[in-house]
Amino acid sequence: MADVFCSACGNANSAATQFCPKCGTAQASGPATGYAAQQLNFAQPQQGFGQPQQGFGQPGFQQPVYGPAPKSRVTAGLFALLLGGLGVHKFYLNKVGLGVLYLLFCWTFVPSVIALIEGIIYLTQDDATFSRNQGVPVATNGW
Image 1 (cartoon, one colour):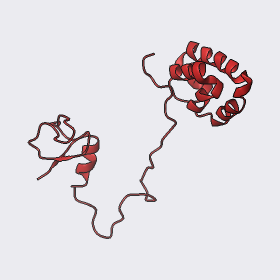
Image 2 (tube, helix red, strand yellow):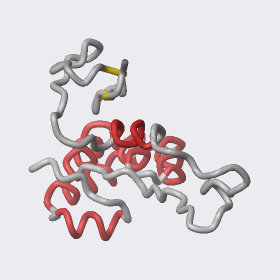
Image 3 (spheres, one colour):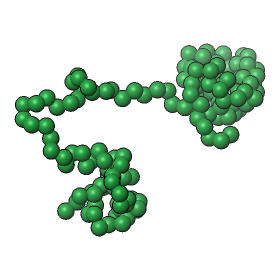
Image 4 (tube, one colour):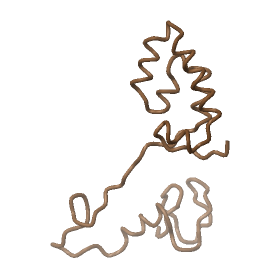
């Protein structure tokens, strides 16, 4: 009988297994968290017949909020220095309109000069200034 779910892949395992046979992750001996806790919640008694279940459009249901993905300042700077004439750094920073503009005028080499300057600026700015100027959260990768 499967009564424990793997926290990494969600595979159903018996309580006696120490490692998940599907992904090899060590199984926690304490209460389940993450994906496993969500799976175990289905085993709990459900609301009675005729009572509304909590879901989309129901009071108390909160829709998950997703923001823009964090961007690396160093990656944006390297894209600007190496492929800036094509506007790759602008596409990376979710500025598609400017990326298309760079792409349209790449034959003039003006976007290349601007991108060279932008790449130097990106690499010399601190993370807070970069995030504020570009309007994206900064990925903290230790660089």
